[in-house]
Image 1 (tube, rainbow, N blue to C red):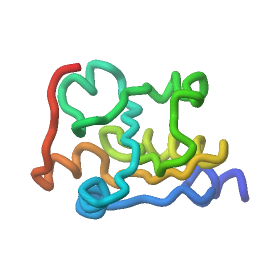
Image 2 (image 1 turned 90 degrees about the vertical axis):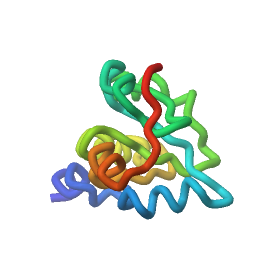
Image 3 (image 1 turned 30 degrees about the vertical axis):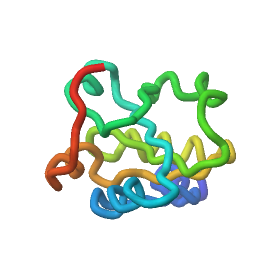
Image 4 (image 1 turned 135 degrees about the vertical axis):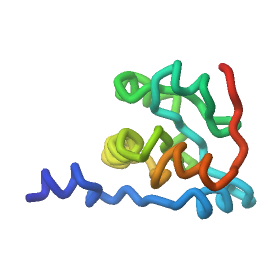
Length: 116
């Protein structure tokens, strides 16, 4: 049962709505933004200052990520970023999943940067 709970988000990874994530990003101690989509998805539009590390490359890029800051994990809909958040949380990182992903972010009218 613990295996299934960890797959479904019970392993300590938290999530935020687009509105709450935007408030955190605008606050005094903003999280590091990790986009786990593929490069073509990222180029189509991402949160400004997001760093791209595709989910399938994440385990090899852990040393590039800050241990001293919350990491906001982002994907298209929130599924891949949820996986990333749980993986990182299990490795000792403080993670937050953007619930609804870039779909929710763009629906809320928040800024999107296009290109690489």
